[in-house]
Amino acid sequence: MTDQIESLTRLRFHPDQLDPIRVYIETYPNNAHMMTIVCCGQAWSHAWSAIGPGSLFDFFIDANNSYIVEKFFGDTKETDYDQIGNDTGIDGIDVTSMLLHSDILCDTYGEDWCLDIPRCTSSDAKYFYRIIYAVKNHMIQIQERAYASITGGTSL
Image: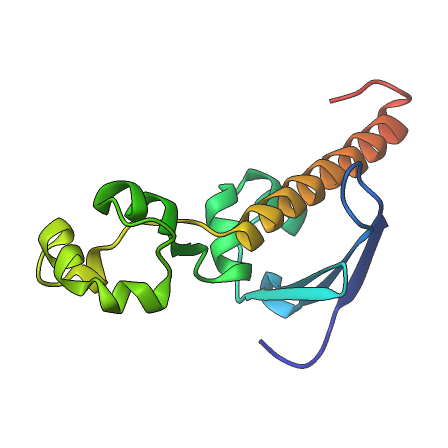
């Protein structure tokens, strides 16, 4: 991407059951984009060097939520201590006690247990999925309003 921004779009909205969200979309030559999402004092950014034909709104709305979350958030998984406790019978297991019980973990998950322990979606990632869902819904509403203004009130 180059440093020359062709356009900057800012969205601000307050979805139900979430903190206010701000989205900044920078458009560069050759249909490259940078998007930054800000919510509750945290910010996540991702750049696409090209998205093909169409707008970033269309691309973002149509993209799989897991794809979007992984691009912005990175690793969405964390160790599933509840599942490990259920599998091994060890109550209150955590990262420290895992080392103390490595023999049980080896019996349960194999010699490479530290690579094969159960993982689940982190609570932070679950929160970010909710943010992505809200951003997509807001973008859809913007597109519907724009289409209605062009067609004289009929919706998509």
